[in-house]
Each structure stands twice: as structure tokens, then as C-alpha cells.
Image: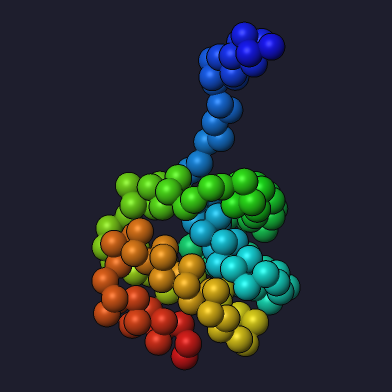
Length: 146
């Protein structure tokens, strides 16, 4: 019996994990979706804000944005952490662009008219992973709130 379990576990260890290609647009969409999901409610106003952000900042068509959000949602659902998404953003942006991304995250959080503490927390975590200073984090929040 023990030999059978050991053989089964060895077989699982040898199987390669499927990898999903995460490009910059997918990573950005995933972070935006993560903020939308943070309070446990996905408001249509937040989804509309995500679509508008992706249309404007990624220069995609509406059809591409819809597909991108559909791709990002299960990635966020299955993700253990935010590392894969943040790694992609960090590797392709500079400090100023990362601050702008934090501001975009705030826009999603404010889209439903309420700022939930969970949304604040997830944006704070993402900002830390993006190496955005606390002062820039607060400035981005104030800019988005106006």
C-alpha cells in the first residue's frame, strides 16, 4: 500500500505544470480584476471602469478587452499570489508608469462609489510589490478620488 502511494506521488511530481502565458495586458487586467473582486462584490460600474481603462491605456478594441477580462478572471481565481502579474508589470514599466498603474487600481476601487477596506488593502499590497512609495501611493489615491 505504501509503495503504491509513493509511486503515485512520484508520478505527480514528474508531470509538468501547465503554464499560461501572461503578457503585460493580461497582468494589468488581472490586477484590475483583483481589485474589483477584493470586496466580494463585482459591480458593473467596476467592470465598466476596467473595460474603459483597458480600452484607453492598452489601445485595444472592445472585443479584445472583453476577451482579456475573460482570460484574466480565471487567472485571478486560480492564482495563489500576485507575483506572476506583478513580475510582468515590474519588468516592463518604470517608476512613473507603476505609480500610474496604482492610480488606475484606485479608479476601479472608487468606481462603485464606495471604498472598501479590502480594496484599500489589496491596492496597498500591490503598490508595495510594484515598489511604489507610500507618498506616491497616497498621491495616486488622492488623484483618483477627485
